[in-house]
Image (cartoon, one colour):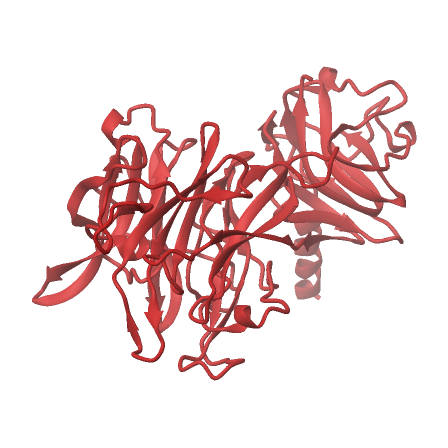
Length: 477
């Protein structure tokens, strides 16, 4: 009897509203619904993973110094252009031998069409007319980024990690060396001696500056009980790093994660997004001499250590035979905001994956998805609702990124922390909102100004029908 009563009390506590003294301060930042961080209750709705659309072959790895095993691509926006870096290498299937490795560079004005400038830096077969940007160690998985650290030295404005061999305990091992550049083109060692040595580095190991926490954060490969896994560590100066920790996924079954592609989401940098290449080592769909097939998965974190990882694929290999070959479908590191191909529609997000690895011809394929569109709170035609935890905001308008069908709708009620409607903002005061917008204010009969509630704990109740809610933010405009 007492046991049943205790279970009932625990269940009630699990669904009870958060205490009014503990609201989440969202300020005016954008909050994508990629997890349940803001969600207090859901009824007949779910968090739904959405899938990017296959677009153009953005970069063809067709130069003599590139080849059919180019990979570990990095992309990022830099001023008025986009940059891409990748390993150039060719594999001879008859000889079962790989050629020399080098770091290649491409750039783009729109993220769709890329060019390869003749940099004149490194010689290949007697000529420097090529896009090779680095050739002196760390080329296997050179992963650059532009450093936004306000204390960054001018000659270190661009940094990178790359795996290099080193001697330790009389055994040849690999560690991550640090690199620097003043312009993203001319590179040199920041530390030729590896700065991170605990792990297994045959992957796209990466680091970036976390602007919110004021530190550098690394993500690199390790093996946990024989399974490819991801480790993380931090640094204040890019040279001295903490001991790595394993990422945590809340009890999800371990799978081989070949890469990680973790990055702060550009529109909401307090949220980390990762795009690992999931590797199934015993499966094969061809007569390739190595077994293994891959797809792209998705995960997010708010502290850099604990991740929500979706086991459903974000990008399946699809109908192209080459994408079912060993070691394809590797997501590039980086999310770019690009113009939509559909006139009159807002910008979208572009991510990139590799195809044609080993079998050739090899390309970097672009995929697109709406802004904040990786995950939504989804309601089917029967309808449902979601209520947030208590939160505090700053601003005058509640801006929604949402989509409905022609028959669908979203309605919003603002409640006090106890769940009672705030006068003037009850569900009955909110007309049906329908359409498709990445930024539309919620509105009530009295208007859309919620400024008088700013700084006060409230809960948001979304009643939805055949609709998706991707993100919210509060704003003055």
